[in-house]
Length: 477
Image 1 (cartoon, helix red, strand yellow):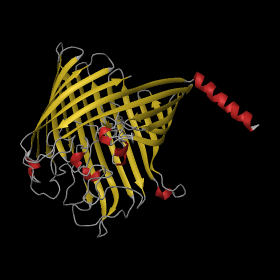
Image 2 (tube, rainbow, N blue to C red):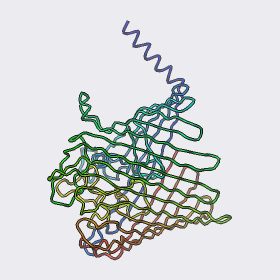
Image 3 (cartoon, helix red, strand yellow):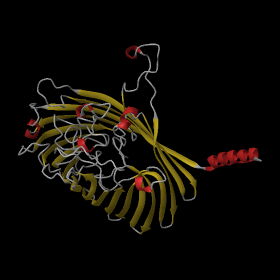
Image 4 (cartoon, rainbow, N blue to C red):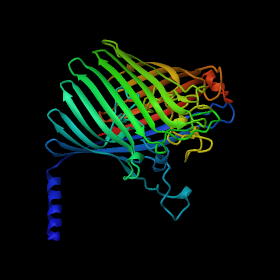
């Protein structure tokens, strides 16, 4: 009887596979980067250069009417780096996989080692007349991507997902999406060991007027000793312990409008709550931070010129307030330039981002495999900053274009323990050529020149100029 049951199950699986509609999409990309002297030390600074490649495969299975299964597989994605940056899709650096030919030394081996394939998404969607039910590990995205970004753009290096259960309810042009997400699962018999994220996302999308706006509320909760809020940010001698519950609330709002020749977008976020950290004097460390981003784009009628602008603000941590964190950090996919606020630069962490990484570069707990923030990829993010980045793009035709961007910024708070420091970060000019010979092939070549600002002078930095070069290629399907 058991044998026949097994045969019937196998036959049913083959029958399901014969009728299921499976669609594949994805992208393969290659990037080459050269940065001259990111340390900004005039004499003795080293350069950084690397090649990376990455492939994403996304199967979509229409199981039955209303039922759809989605997944995502990431190949060549730096297996060793996942321990340091778990949500990255940076790719694998050329030569990062050890040779699997044991007959020769690595330097003379004739083949590269094998890499791994990661399953980064797998979720089921059941769609009905007024919405959808979603369960599994799904991507999350909101607004301009300032706080949450699914990483779907061709050259995105990061992504956000959640293990969630949610209902999306539609009311005409409006949907409301309450969801429950589990960030961390402790012992299954101890609910107090879990970390949770309760979210409500509501958006209005009018296709007739091309206007979008949305609201997001999120509350992350975890019991004391069961959260990983960074205790490395504080420069005071006080010892921080995870001696209280974590409860962080965030509110986000965005607005986007597309006209015939004009686009504008805006997003604002406010984050507050309890970090769960306690000072050695028994004071709870609170969190209160906010950020904003604005985007403008104007295409001249009957002309090939497009003017653009990105500007924003991210609060920084005030080092004089030991019992409060004020640092707001943008999503690392949100870039405004090639060098500034994208790659780590200089001898000091002026933006205060590295202390908040899951495994930050702390003197007593260096991240591996890179012992220095300057030895890592583009892991920098916008924080403790006021920035502005105007741009100009010229389309030669529907295949060729050139874009130039000017980037500058100013620190909000003094970095580290420096006081009354000059807050000018620098002035950068980017030039980028793009070529799309056919619809699914994209080629890019660019460079950046940077004049470091006086803020970098803190920490033995004396370079007056540095530059970067990059080349990118991608094929999507």
